[in-house]
Length: 195
Ligand SMILES: O=c1cc[nH]c(=O)[nH]1
Image (cartoon, rainbow, N blue to C red):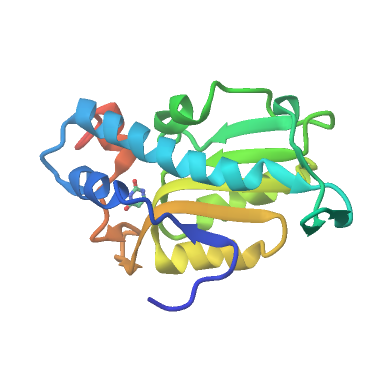
């Protein structure tokens, strides 16, 4: 795979490969799809938040073991959870209950829940809106991405945006669907296939 921008993180958790292949199966019904999206989001979310909620808060200080950065953990009251409608709703319970929409008092960090980053257009547009609202940092949590879309979103926002994803496929087709992908995850979650 081509080299990814440094703000893209593909999980290496050993359970994810199996869960992703179960999710790719067309035979997975809505209940199974929902459970798999939840489980995958939990794993990727834990990794993303473990890395993203602790920030360096000052210059390195001398300790008995050498120099170490002072770190602080961001207070939950300054974090907003932002699901992409409607498919991102399937990730909400895994990452936490919804908190305030970003506003001037709540603009430190937004966690953007976008299960599928295909063209990257939705993800990049959502980040743009959050930045315009004054959000300083955005952590994107995704189940599956297509390489061009993930790279597009990450390169458009090289500062203050980190993208965490369970897996990345090579490309999208002419309808903007990921190949091989997992189908339309919103339709699968909300039982609207063919409607
Ligand atoms: O492959 C795709 C592309 C966009 N949205 C999806 O749910 N799947």
